[in-house]
Image (cartoon, rainbow, N blue to C red; front, side):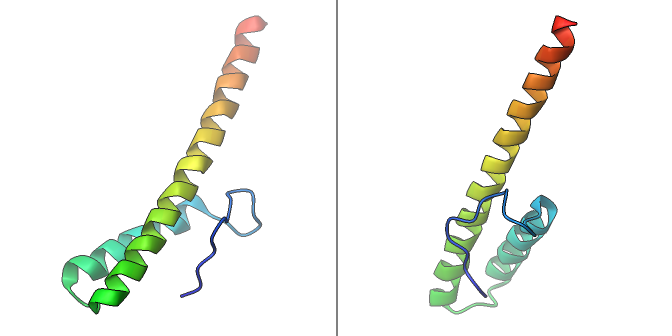
Length: 75
């Protein structure tokens, strides 16, 4: 698995739904006990980074929605 530290939602090829699916896959593998302890920590760290990326993406989209609503209210 390739870690992409600092990846932002604006990077080409980044996809919210794909990241959520990756997070769900990591959770499934951890809960199933399929991983060695070191791999659990690595996967957990990856999941946390993906969650940060998703949160940033959602915050950006919320700001866009707020701006659009504000624009509509002014008309």
